[in-house]
Amino acid sequence: MTSQVDAVILALRSVLQDAERIQVTYWETRTINRWINQLPGAWTWKWRHLKLRGDVDRKVSRMDAIVHLRATIYYLEENRDSIKGPSFRWPKPKNEKVPLPAEPPKPQYKMVEGPALDTRH
Image (cartoon, rainbow, N blue to C red):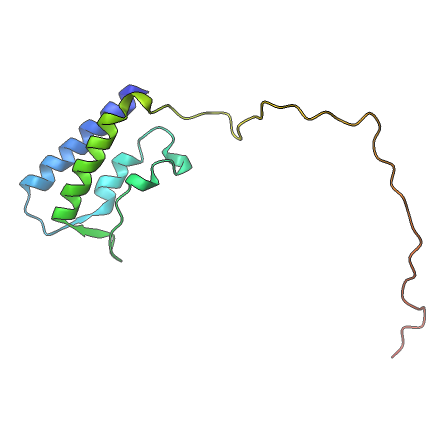
């Protein structure tokens, strides 16, 4: 799974170089978030803390994008070895086994008084 993380880091570095080179005032958040969505387990919202949130139009200032990209790249580089791939077993199985009762429970019925037969009002 390291190759997936390395690919995301390289893509984010490329976006960072573009953000530093191009003098656009505002950047769309999806430019950055599309690469974060490629991390293993992203479909489980595992990396939501790395996603960039913008204003109503989903845009951020150029400097905010640069700072966020640098921090995200640094985080991924430092934790590259500990990032594991997605688990394809959903939901995760429990290790403990619940013993089944020897006999199924026997229901107990009670007579309950219902409404009167004369329901005219």
